[in-house]
Figure (cartoon, helix red, strand yellow):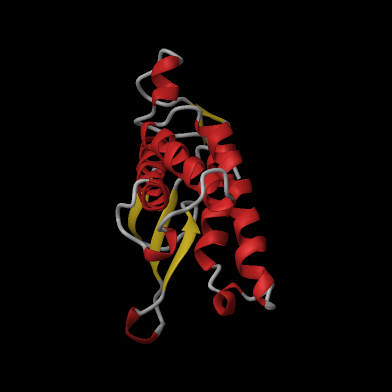
Length: 180
């Protein structure tokens, strides 16, 4: 498939109440409902990646602030000893979440936070006796954060990041389909 292929959504005739919508290549002989040119993806992919990065950083920073600053208050984080594993995780969450929000060093920060969340999953959740079932051990969020941050370590920060400003670009440049 070529990078400049246009994809079109088609209403398939002969289906009950035309209820099925199928994605086909634009060369199809069906009647198109609308088309999404490649420029649409090139424009919105970095912007949505940047928005995802900002929201993930905001949600993640709350974990660190709860552990280190007591806000929002979570009783189990009261009086954490300095240097303990939860305290160190709190520092990484607070600093890493802030760096993700502004998009500073997104790739290395994403890699470090991905490792932190994988470590947290296996230490705090998988040890409950059901490692392959995060739903049963309460580790869904840790797994999701781990893979989300791993994605950021590969994809970069997208739009709205200091990484782009430091490179002298206001908009991310697409290189082989990925935002840089």
